[in-house]
Figure 1: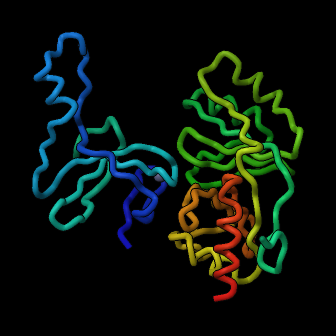
Figure 2 (figure 1 turned 45 degrees about the vertical axis):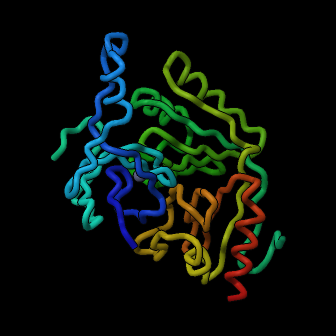
Figure 3 (figure 1 turned 135 degrees about the vertical axis):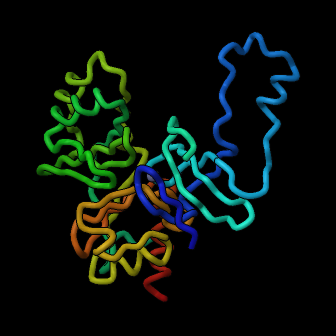
Amino acid sequence: MLLIDCPYCGNRPEIEFTYGGQAHIARPTQPADYDDHQWTEFLYLRDNQRGLRAERWRHSHGCGRFFNALRDTTTDRFHGTYKVGEPRP
Amino acid sequence: MAETSLYMRMLPPMSRWILQGGADALSAAARAWPAGLSSEACRARGQGELHALWLGPEEFLLLAPPDHEPRALREALAGMPHSLVDVSHRQVAFEVCGPDCALLLSAACPLDLDAAHFPVGMCTRTVFGKADIVLWRTRADAFHVEVWRSFLPYCTELLAEQVQN
Ligand SMILES: [Zn+2]
């Protein structure tokens, strides 16, 4: 079973978690200034890289918290987790 | 649906609240709620029939006898950003007990329920099969399970199936 290290609860089974997409996508501070192209980029365009990637995860059947995780997309191996707001290690 | 058996029994009705708030609200609540609030993750605290179960860093499940009115708690939280929601009728509780209780729950719960990893006093939200539950070890040979009421037949029948196996 794949274990994910929730920053609040510790190692827990993957089935308790929900994937939340690419991490560190900042919301626009002045949304009204965005044109269609910038909105498209913010809403839809993701890096989709192969290898180590920062992602959002939510411990939905646990503490309910969102956090960030470094996961290798080729091996599905988690290389660490950290709280929202903390810099990528 | 087996309501009482050697391995499980329904627990009596209770008052329940979900308390959510930031650090200030939670420290005020910890002083006003007789059982206090655990600052350690996944731990329950209790005094008499009043209990507080840690569900998340800003979320607690409070349990009390029916008709208990948490007046001191409301007063302590007045004016602070928080939410205190009565969920007494949203969920029901049953107890899985006996020497095989951990084994029975393990059939549909992915956590390590060995006493070394899930000791008495530990509590957490998790899953039982496809149902979202709150699991709380109250004794070495008993678990308190909170489940949303519409999932109760699913949980008890799944448990009964494990007993037969
Ligand atoms: Zn967690």
